[in-house]
Length: 482
Image 1 (cartoon, rainbow, N blue to C red):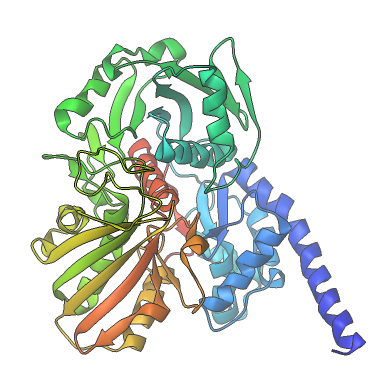
Image 2: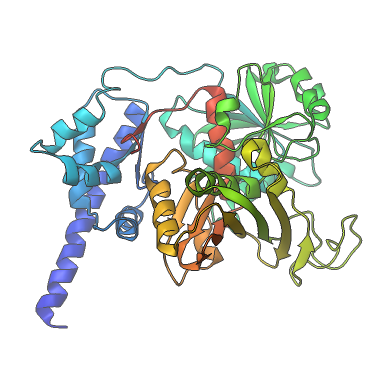
């Protein structure tokens, strides 16, 4: 490479770095002053570094026929600052791409104003019932805490007020805080943590979170901590039916309950993006279904909508979970007593049949099984489907790509088209499932789809989406989907 070429490349990088650096405080101002959450093709850019911001722009080339630069998005951010808009989710990447295609002589400011005309001058109504309590503080509980703490920066959002656990041996508070701070899979907490020993609380990025020690739900009086009309998110999995979970409603200060596991009996199992429209004000107890059900249901829905599903089989290749043994030991479940880090373990899954609770039209059409494998996080669902019509690989992949970008399930379905990705590449992915386009197999009307999912973080984001709807803190998203 000539010296001139070297200089040009380096100068271009430095120019884009400089623009990204100038964008960061503007994005922060939109977030904290106007409660505008910005993203680039679904990738969050609030509280991100210069490199994170540049990588989010780079990602777009994998999804669109054109590249996206900070030169394109910076004017969009500046235009947003000048508008009387608040409480919205705005994808500045999609707005920039749409401007390039549909400006029709308008400058950026005029185009952005036209796109957001429905929310200029007024904000979405906010419910006062936004206090949240985490009952349990395991893998999902800690990720839920991280997500809610991160989202609390703009105000007027879910407020994590308390965490309920049983008191452990030793300095319990320090150990709880340490587990929130450090995670072997998801990395360190993005922010600062401190402990109020006297009042038994954790302070995370300015969020004061009371740690409540209790042995059963009904004995707690949340109102003595200033908590009222709270949504209790039960992530223990101890109770999964109406009777057991109703204990939470006996506690003073509780309004509703959300279970982070498949609900039994007549409990509504909600997969956000699919049947969250079924949530009614009278529903006091809801289930967020399972991580696998959340991963596969959106893909199954869009495939059924477009092509019709005759029948199919779901095989889940799932990372081991906390209910398995590290080394061989007694376990009440078949095969689960064998060492999780050393074995592939065939086990059952109810995800295939559970799909029907969110998509009744697929009732009885799917079978399912699972294989637990020696990885700590990120799983895969293989959907083997018989469709009502013949299709091609290109047709299916293009359709699913479009659904991931411009549909009602764009937050649930992600799409990747790389021959090199492996499971660890999807740690921290916020979507319920990620379609691996390179792995798609088609033979006439028979289709095999490979769907990755972060069974911890992606699922936790789905839980938070339900919580936001229940608490009335959902904001409009722009640009409006096509």
